Image (cartoon, rainbow, N blue to C red; front, side, top):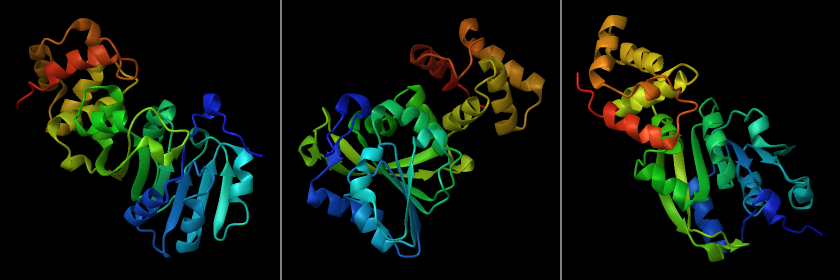
Length: 254
């Protein structure tokens, strides 16, 4: 018999039928679509999706859940950590993930081929994104994706209730041209994250404004960003220093 292993996998199984029905209604699965479900759990959503889509790929880390997921139509089960494999190309991703892996997952999603994602996620992350809080995770999300809150889900809707509210959100990839200036800059700072910020910021300004290196360097010099931040890299910058950097970046006016 399957028993929850909360400490290991941070599993919270959605059991509220009304919420399940609303979730599926929001996702609007069509029989022409290829779907990827990440973290199927006990298959509460999976059984419905498999009979309403063209093809379903299920990525599930816990092989003990096989008894709930076997013998489904149009379905391929991939028992693996989603962070360790390529996400199959699809029309829609349906997922519920523990907060502990949301940052590497969002980074992985940048290069995934999908049209829409419907995600059940803890309220803290979603609120940070929607409120444009200056954290690396929030900035990366807003620099590459558009997130819309669709439904509030209360802890009582889960087997093993989480400590906070959850939301069902819709996630779509953003076009670079449609981003606000500050998120264009952050998009490129992340793209060049292994370079020093003074160099990645220069590359960003050159690309956004079609500047010369000298022109971009002059703008950066005038910002008077602290040297320790300019010498840091976006991949290693702390949220504290990111807030300092942001105060300087929002002053850019050309």
